[in-house]
Image (tube, rainbow, N blue to C red):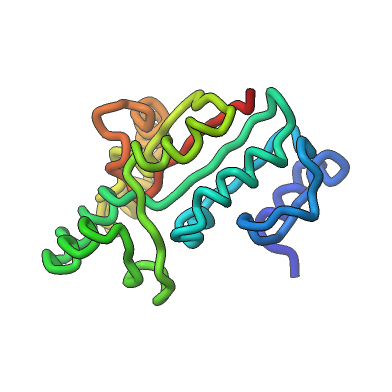
Length: 188
Protein backbone atom coordinates (compact mmCIF):
# COMPACT_ATOMS: atom_id res chain seq x y z
CA UNK A 1 0.00 0.00 0.00
CA UNK A 2 1.52 3.34 -0.99
CA UNK A 3 2.41 5.81 1.72
CA UNK A 4 1.56 9.52 1.68
CA UNK A 5 4.76 10.47 -0.15
CA UNK A 6 4.01 8.06 -2.97
CA UNK A 7 0.37 9.18 -3.14
CA UNK A 8 1.39 12.86 -3.33
CA UNK A 9 3.99 12.15 -6.02
CA UNK A 10 1.43 10.26 -8.10
CA UNK A 11 -1.30 12.85 -7.52
CA UNK A 12 1.02 15.65 -8.67
CA UNK A 13 2.26 13.73 -11.73
CA UNK A 14 5.87 13.65 -10.52
CA UNK A 15 6.63 9.93 -10.93
CA UNK A 16 9.14 10.60 -13.73
CA UNK A 17 10.80 13.49 -11.88
CA UNK A 18 11.18 12.19 -8.32
CA UNK A 19 13.18 9.26 -7.01
CA UNK A 20 12.27 8.08 -3.51
CA UNK A 21 14.94 6.13 -1.68
CA UNK A 22 14.74 4.35 1.64
CA UNK A 23 18.02 3.67 3.36
CA UNK A 24 20.43 4.33 6.17
CA UNK A 25 21.67 7.93 6.12
CA UNK A 26 24.85 6.87 7.91
CA UNK A 27 25.75 4.67 4.92
CA UNK A 28 24.73 6.01 1.51
CA UNK A 29 27.55 4.13 -0.24
CA UNK A 30 25.15 2.76 -2.86
CA UNK A 31 25.13 6.29 -4.29
CA UNK A 32 28.08 7.91 -6.05
CA UNK A 33 29.39 11.29 -4.98
CA UNK A 34 27.37 14.22 -6.36
CA UNK A 35 24.34 12.11 -7.38
CA UNK A 36 21.35 14.26 -6.44
CA UNK A 37 20.31 17.84 -7.25
CA UNK A 38 18.01 17.95 -4.23
CA UNK A 39 18.12 15.89 -1.02
CA UNK A 40 15.37 15.85 1.60
CA UNK A 41 15.90 14.30 5.01
CA UNK A 42 12.93 15.27 7.18
CA UNK A 43 11.57 13.95 10.43
CA UNK A 44 13.83 12.44 13.02
CA UNK A 45 16.46 10.67 10.87
CA UNK A 46 19.41 12.83 12.00
CA UNK A 47 18.21 12.57 15.60
CA UNK A 48 18.13 8.76 15.50
CA UNK A 49 21.76 8.57 14.37
CA UNK A 50 22.93 9.80 17.81
CA UNK A 51 26.76 9.77 17.93
CA UNK A 52 26.88 9.03 14.17
CA UNK A 53 25.14 12.26 13.19
CA UNK A 54 28.35 13.81 11.79
CA UNK A 55 28.75 10.76 9.52
CA UNK A 56 25.12 11.15 8.41
CA UNK A 57 25.64 14.85 7.65
CA UNK A 58 28.77 14.06 5.61
CA UNK A 59 26.90 11.40 3.65
CA UNK A 60 23.99 13.71 2.86
CA UNK A 61 26.40 16.38 1.60
CA UNK A 62 28.51 13.83 -0.30
CA UNK A 63 25.60 12.55 -2.41
CA UNK A 64 24.36 16.07 -3.19
CA UNK A 65 25.63 17.66 -6.41
CA UNK A 66 27.66 20.88 -6.30
CA UNK A 67 25.24 23.82 -5.94
CA UNK A 68 22.54 21.29 -5.02
CA UNK A 69 20.15 21.89 -2.15
CA UNK A 70 19.33 19.91 0.96
CA UNK A 71 16.43 20.23 3.35
CA UNK A 72 17.23 18.53 6.64
CA UNK A 73 15.45 18.49 9.99
CA UNK A 74 16.24 17.26 13.50
CA UNK A 75 14.57 17.19 16.89
CA UNK A 76 15.01 20.39 18.88
CA UNK A 77 16.45 20.09 22.37
CA UNK A 78 14.77 23.32 23.49
CA UNK A 79 11.41 22.37 21.98
CA UNK A 80 11.39 19.06 23.82
CA UNK A 81 12.57 20.71 27.05
CA UNK A 82 9.43 22.85 26.86
CA UNK A 83 7.32 19.73 26.37
CA UNK A 84 8.75 18.11 29.51
CA UNK A 85 8.20 21.29 31.51
CA UNK A 86 4.62 21.62 30.26
CA UNK A 87 4.05 18.05 31.51
CA UNK A 88 5.51 18.95 34.94
CA UNK A 89 8.42 16.58 34.35
CA UNK A 90 11.30 18.77 35.49
CA UNK A 91 13.51 15.77 36.29
CA UNK A 92 13.38 14.56 32.66
CA UNK A 93 13.90 18.12 31.42
CA UNK A 94 17.09 18.41 33.47
CA UNK A 95 18.30 15.02 32.19
CA UNK A 96 17.58 16.00 28.58
CA UNK A 97 19.39 19.30 28.98
CA UNK A 98 22.45 17.48 30.35
CA UNK A 99 22.55 14.49 27.96
CA UNK A 100 20.76 15.74 24.84
CA UNK A 101 18.98 12.37 24.64
CA UNK A 102 15.38 11.26 25.16
CA UNK A 103 13.22 8.17 24.67
CA UNK A 104 9.81 9.23 25.92
CA UNK A 105 8.63 11.01 22.77
CA UNK A 106 9.68 8.46 20.15
CA UNK A 107 8.03 5.19 21.11
CA UNK A 108 10.95 4.20 23.33
CA UNK A 109 13.66 4.80 20.72
CA UNK A 110 16.52 6.94 21.96
CA UNK A 111 17.06 10.11 19.99
CA UNK A 112 19.66 12.82 20.12
CA UNK A 113 18.12 16.27 20.38
CA UNK A 114 20.04 19.31 19.21
CA UNK A 115 20.15 23.05 19.69
CA UNK A 116 20.14 25.27 16.60
CA UNK A 117 23.88 25.87 17.04
CA UNK A 118 24.66 22.16 17.37
CA UNK A 119 22.61 21.35 14.28
CA UNK A 120 24.03 24.10 12.08
CA UNK A 121 27.57 23.25 13.22
CA UNK A 122 27.10 19.74 11.82
CA UNK A 123 26.98 21.24 8.34
CA UNK A 124 28.99 24.47 8.43
CA UNK A 125 32.34 22.67 8.17
CA UNK A 126 31.23 20.44 5.28
CA UNK A 127 31.66 22.59 2.19
CA UNK A 128 28.15 23.96 2.30
CA UNK A 129 26.24 27.09 3.19
CA UNK A 130 23.18 27.30 5.44
CA UNK A 131 20.62 29.27 3.40
CA UNK A 132 17.83 29.24 5.98
CA UNK A 133 17.11 28.00 9.47
CA UNK A 134 13.57 27.51 10.73
CA UNK A 135 11.74 26.07 13.69
CA UNK A 136 8.77 23.78 13.00
CA UNK A 137 6.20 24.23 14.27
CA UNK A 138 6.96 27.75 15.38
CA UNK A 139 4.53 29.97 17.22
CA UNK A 140 1.82 27.29 17.23
CA UNK A 141 4.05 24.60 18.77
CA UNK A 142 2.30 24.69 22.15
CA UNK A 143 -1.29 25.17 21.04
CA UNK A 144 -3.33 22.46 22.66
CA UNK A 145 -4.90 19.96 20.27
CA UNK A 146 -8.39 21.11 21.30
CA UNK A 147 -7.61 24.74 20.46
CA UNK A 148 -6.08 23.70 17.16
CA UNK A 149 -9.30 21.84 16.31
CA UNK A 150 -11.30 25.00 17.06
CA UNK A 151 -9.04 27.13 14.87
CA UNK A 152 -9.26 24.60 12.05
CA UNK A 153 -13.07 24.91 11.94
CA UNK A 154 -12.71 28.40 10.49
CA UNK A 155 -10.96 28.44 7.10
CA UNK A 156 -10.09 32.10 7.62
CA UNK A 157 -8.51 31.49 11.05
CA UNK A 158 -6.76 28.34 9.86
CA UNK A 159 -5.21 30.19 6.93
CA UNK A 160 -4.23 33.06 9.22
CA UNK A 161 -2.42 30.60 11.53
CA UNK A 162 -0.62 29.02 8.56
CA UNK A 163 0.41 32.47 7.34
CA UNK A 164 1.71 33.35 10.82
CA UNK A 165 3.72 30.10 10.93
CA UNK A 166 5.25 30.78 7.52
CA UNK A 167 6.08 34.37 8.42
CA UNK A 168 7.57 33.61 11.84
CA UNK A 169 9.28 30.20 11.56
CA UNK A 170 12.58 31.82 10.56
CA UNK A 171 12.44 34.53 13.25
CA UNK A 172 15.75 34.25 15.09
CA UNK A 173 14.17 34.87 18.49
CA UNK A 174 12.13 31.64 18.31
CA UNK A 175 14.52 29.34 16.41
CA UNK A 176 14.75 26.04 18.20
CA UNK A 177 11.61 26.60 20.27
CA UNK A 178 9.49 24.27 18.13
CA UNK A 179 9.80 20.49 18.19
CA UNK A 180 12.04 20.42 15.10
CA UNK A 181 14.77 22.51 13.53
CA UNK A 182 14.83 22.72 9.73
CA UNK A 183 17.84 23.71 7.63
CA UNK A 184 17.93 24.64 3.96
CA UNK A 185 21.49 24.05 2.76
CA UNK A 186 23.42 24.65 -0.46
CA UNK A 187 26.43 22.47 -1.25
CA UNK A 188 29.33 24.60 -2.46
